[in-house]
Length: 172
View: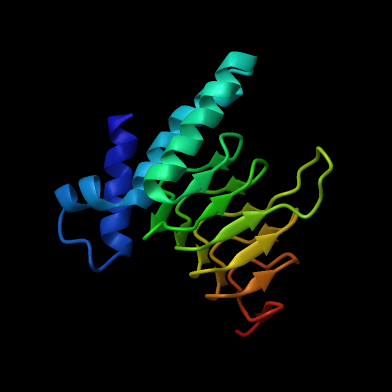
C-alpha cells in the first residue's frame, strides 16, 4: 500500500510543475486522496457482499463530499492514475482506467445506456484527459492518446491520437 502511495506522489510530482514537494502532494492533492480512497472502496465492492457494497458506496459518497471527485467503487483504476485539481471528476461504475493516466478537473467517464452492461469508457495506459472532457459510452481511448479540454468523445480514439472538439475529432 505504501509503495503505491509513493508511486502516486512521484507520478503527480512528475506531471504537475506546481507540485513543489512530496509533503505538499501527499497532503494537498484531493485527486490523489480520491484515488486512494477509491482503492479501499473498490476492494469492498469486489468483496461482493451486500454489506460491503453498501459501505463501498457510502465511502465513495463521503469522498465525493470531501474532494469533489466521484469514483464509483466498481470502476477499475490502474497504477499511478492522477487527477489534477480533481473537482467535478465523475468516473462511472464500469469504467476501466489503465496505468499512468492523467486527467484534469471536470472529466466525466459516463455511461450511454441504462442496461446492466459495460457502459462506461476504457482509458488505456498513458492517456491524458483535458479539463472538462466528456467521454460517453463503451468506448476505448487508446494508449498514449490525448483528449483536449472540453471535448465530447463518443467514439473510440486510436492509440497516440489527439482529439479535440464537440464532437471530438482527430487533429494530429
